[in-house]
Image (cartoon, rainbow, N blue to C red):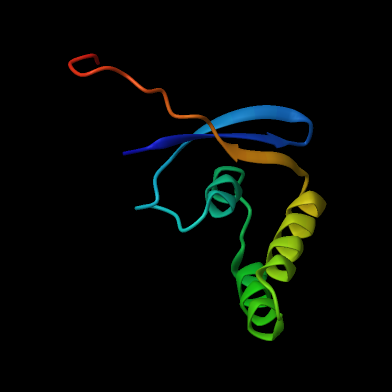
Length: 87
């Protein structure tokens, strides 16, 4: 089941369909949508996660890197709960 990502790239708000079957994280999905290669970033992120004592260090590294790339808010849209039988 796909979800919707709402993100800001270079001060423009955009939406993107997202599935965990295609990408590991929403950050990878938005970078791919904007044509950004994350190969070097993913290697560095693994190294940060390996030496960090908390998960917050890796999250802070990711957030600061994406800000430098021009991204603002990156979030999943809320799910719409529908009743049984509704499409």
